[in-house]
Image: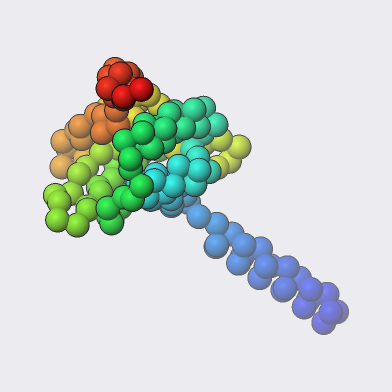
Length: 163
Protein backbone atom coordinates (compact mmCIF):
# COMPACT_ATOMS: atom_id res chain seq x y z
CA UNK A 1 0.00 0.00 0.00
CA UNK A 2 2.83 2.38 0.82
CA UNK A 3 4.33 1.73 -2.62
CA UNK A 4 1.06 2.61 -4.36
CA UNK A 5 0.74 5.78 -2.28
CA UNK A 6 4.32 6.81 -3.12
CA UNK A 7 3.81 6.21 -6.83
CA UNK A 8 0.57 8.21 -6.80
CA UNK A 9 2.20 11.03 -4.83
CA UNK A 10 5.10 11.17 -7.29
CA UNK A 11 2.69 11.18 -10.25
CA UNK A 12 0.57 13.98 -8.76
CA UNK A 13 3.69 15.99 -7.94
CA UNK A 14 5.01 15.50 -11.48
CA UNK A 15 1.77 16.68 -13.05
CA UNK A 16 1.62 19.68 -10.72
CA UNK A 17 5.19 20.67 -11.58
CA UNK A 18 4.60 20.25 -15.33
CA UNK A 19 1.47 22.40 -15.34
CA UNK A 20 2.99 25.10 -13.13
CA UNK A 21 5.92 25.48 -15.55
CA UNK A 22 3.69 25.97 -18.61
CA UNK A 23 3.84 29.53 -19.90
CA UNK A 24 0.69 31.49 -20.61
CA UNK A 25 -0.05 32.63 -24.16
CA UNK A 26 0.82 36.19 -23.13
CA UNK A 27 4.23 35.08 -21.84
CA UNK A 28 4.82 33.06 -25.00
CA UNK A 29 3.91 36.05 -27.21
CA UNK A 30 6.25 38.31 -25.22
CA UNK A 31 9.10 35.81 -25.54
CA UNK A 32 8.54 35.22 -29.27
CA UNK A 33 8.32 38.96 -29.98
CA UNK A 34 11.45 39.67 -27.95
CA UNK A 35 13.42 36.86 -29.62
CA UNK A 36 12.37 37.95 -33.13
CA UNK A 37 13.01 41.66 -32.58
CA UNK A 38 16.36 41.04 -30.92
CA UNK A 39 17.59 38.82 -33.76
CA UNK A 40 16.21 41.11 -36.49
CA UNK A 41 17.70 44.25 -35.00
CA UNK A 42 21.08 42.55 -34.56
CA UNK A 43 20.93 41.88 -38.31
CA UNK A 44 20.74 38.14 -37.57
CA UNK A 45 18.19 37.53 -40.29
CA UNK A 46 18.57 33.73 -40.27
CA UNK A 47 17.96 33.83 -36.52
CA UNK A 48 14.94 36.09 -36.99
CA UNK A 49 13.41 33.61 -39.45
CA UNK A 50 13.39 30.98 -36.68
CA UNK A 51 10.86 33.16 -34.84
CA UNK A 52 8.80 34.16 -37.90
CA UNK A 53 6.05 32.55 -39.93
CA UNK A 54 7.17 30.62 -43.01
CA UNK A 55 5.45 33.26 -45.17
CA UNK A 56 7.65 35.93 -43.60
CA UNK A 57 10.94 34.33 -44.70
CA UNK A 58 10.84 35.81 -48.23
CA UNK A 59 10.33 39.33 -46.91
CA UNK A 60 13.09 38.90 -44.32
CA UNK A 61 15.44 37.71 -47.08
CA UNK A 62 14.51 40.77 -49.18
CA UNK A 63 15.23 43.08 -46.25
CA UNK A 64 18.52 41.26 -45.57
CA UNK A 65 19.56 41.79 -49.21
CA UNK A 66 18.69 45.47 -48.98
CA UNK A 67 20.66 45.80 -45.72
CA UNK A 68 23.66 44.04 -47.29
CA UNK A 69 23.52 46.30 -50.36
CA UNK A 70 23.50 49.29 -48.04
CA UNK A 71 26.60 48.00 -46.28
CA UNK A 72 24.90 47.29 -42.96
CA UNK A 73 27.18 44.98 -41.01
CA UNK A 74 26.67 46.05 -37.42
CA UNK A 75 23.56 47.14 -35.57
CA UNK A 76 23.55 49.67 -32.73
CA UNK A 77 23.10 48.33 -29.22
CA UNK A 78 19.47 48.59 -28.15
CA UNK A 79 16.99 47.36 -25.60
CA UNK A 80 13.61 45.83 -26.48
CA UNK A 81 10.70 46.22 -24.10
CA UNK A 82 7.36 44.55 -24.78
CA UNK A 83 4.87 47.06 -23.37
CA UNK A 84 1.52 45.41 -24.14
CA UNK A 85 0.18 42.19 -25.61
CA UNK A 86 -3.26 41.65 -27.12
CA UNK A 87 -4.33 38.15 -28.10
CA UNK A 88 -7.31 37.40 -30.33
CA UNK A 89 -7.53 33.65 -30.92
CA UNK A 90 -4.57 32.61 -33.09
CA UNK A 91 -3.45 36.22 -33.71
CA UNK A 92 -1.64 38.59 -31.38
CA UNK A 93 -0.15 42.06 -31.33
CA UNK A 94 2.85 42.94 -29.18
CA UNK A 95 3.45 46.66 -28.66
CA UNK A 96 7.12 47.33 -27.98
CA UNK A 97 9.72 50.03 -27.62
CA UNK A 98 13.25 49.98 -28.98
CA UNK A 99 15.76 52.13 -27.13
CA UNK A 100 19.15 52.60 -28.79
CA UNK A 101 22.01 54.35 -27.04
CA UNK A 102 21.73 58.10 -27.44
CA UNK A 103 18.34 57.97 -29.15
CA UNK A 104 14.74 58.37 -28.06
CA UNK A 105 12.74 55.19 -27.60
CA UNK A 106 10.65 54.23 -30.63
CA UNK A 107 7.28 52.59 -30.10
CA UNK A 108 5.79 50.23 -32.63
CA UNK A 109 3.90 46.95 -32.88
CA UNK A 110 4.58 43.42 -34.04
CA UNK A 111 1.90 41.05 -35.26
CA UNK A 112 2.23 37.39 -34.31
CA UNK A 113 0.37 34.27 -35.35
CA UNK A 114 0.07 30.93 -33.59
CA UNK A 115 1.34 28.21 -35.93
CA UNK A 116 1.36 24.59 -34.76
CA UNK A 117 1.09 25.74 -31.14
CA UNK A 118 4.00 28.19 -31.41
CA UNK A 119 3.76 32.01 -31.57
CA UNK A 120 5.64 33.39 -34.61
CA UNK A 121 6.24 36.94 -35.85
CA UNK A 122 4.52 38.13 -39.01
CA UNK A 123 6.80 40.18 -41.28
CA UNK A 124 5.22 41.48 -44.47
CA UNK A 125 6.25 43.98 -47.12
CA UNK A 126 4.52 46.59 -44.95
CA UNK A 127 6.85 45.77 -42.06
CA UNK A 128 6.41 44.12 -38.69
CA UNK A 129 2.79 44.97 -38.14
CA UNK A 130 1.20 44.95 -41.55
CA UNK A 131 -1.34 47.39 -40.17
CA UNK A 132 -2.26 49.51 -37.20
CA UNK A 133 -0.90 48.72 -33.78
CA UNK A 134 -3.01 48.06 -30.76
CA UNK A 135 -4.02 50.84 -28.42
CA UNK A 136 -1.60 51.73 -25.65
CA UNK A 137 -2.67 51.66 -22.03
CA UNK A 138 -3.28 55.41 -22.25
CA UNK A 139 -5.82 54.78 -25.04
CA UNK A 140 -3.60 56.20 -27.75
CA UNK A 141 -2.96 54.23 -30.92
CA UNK A 142 0.66 53.55 -31.78
CA UNK A 143 1.79 54.45 -35.26
CA UNK A 144 1.48 51.96 -38.06
CA UNK A 145 4.47 49.67 -38.21
CA UNK A 146 6.13 51.35 -41.14
CA UNK A 147 9.68 51.49 -39.81
CA UNK A 148 10.68 49.02 -42.52
CA UNK A 149 11.12 49.99 -46.17
CA UNK A 150 8.11 49.78 -48.43
CA UNK A 151 8.20 48.06 -51.80
CA UNK A 152 8.55 51.47 -53.44
CA UNK A 153 11.48 52.41 -51.18
CA UNK A 154 13.18 49.10 -51.91
CA UNK A 155 12.76 49.62 -55.67
CA UNK A 156 14.16 53.14 -55.38
CA UNK A 157 17.15 51.88 -53.36
CA UNK A 158 17.84 49.19 -55.97
CA UNK A 159 17.63 51.78 -58.76
CA UNK A 160 20.31 53.88 -57.04
CA UNK A 161 22.86 51.04 -56.89
CA UNK A 162 25.72 51.57 -59.35
CA UNK A 163 26.20 48.71 -61.77
